[in-house]
Figure 1: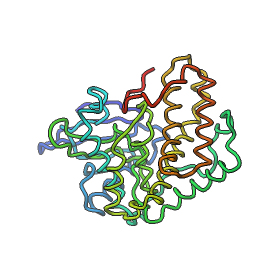
Figure 2: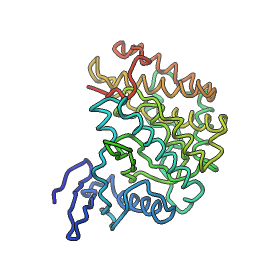
Figure 3: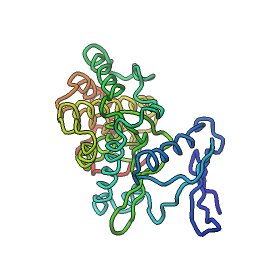
Figure 4: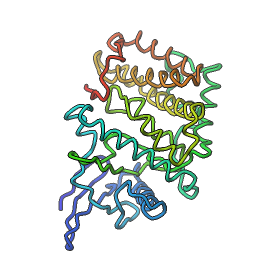
Length: 322
């Protein structure tokens, strides 16, 4: 048995006397992870025992600071495959990831009233945002409040949200059928299902751009939430979720402002803001809020000449460098 540090966690793969392999995950006593193993165990048990679906590892035992789970090897993390080979050879695996997340929303919709809520989106304007060079005010600020309202009042879209729906949190088979399994549910909670779709439209921390699989997610979700077939309803929620993610990422702009010219995170932030505004444009929703986002992007491009690039030319799932 060996413990592998995966900040802020410690993870071990253990061979039991009966020949089974299990994974043990602990929080290493870090304050900000307190309670997360118990939340992860609760989510995994809900899926397997409450909802009767196989989307994630099974739980064998759990405590307040640790959880013992089924070992899903030889599956590997999808993000590692994409980093190694590019997204092209793994498009089917990416779609399997989207299908698994959509199914998570579909099967849990309306069935998680006793599960704790996600701490997202923020109720007010995030700290640090007022310092961005374009004020969030007037019609844009009113739409911000309305968009938050859509997400915190999900109605039929209320389900178990993964909370960190990125490609590093899904394991797939590297050969043959993907047989995807979602992992790392420590940030999961009751929330609007469409929050888990954002990563197929707007880049997360690892990528410069993303693309594809968004409709796969939507079709899987619609199997249990037919309202997802309504363009107006789904587009409004998706636009709100993507713009909230962009707003959250904008809190980092002062940190990036102190970095040297050429830091890839600057281009990534421009790409993130424009991708979110682009989603709103495609679905014809949130015109004032997305208009504000376009103006913020233009301001960032002016402040950072090194980030004034054609983000449309960025390849989907290009890895963010330094």
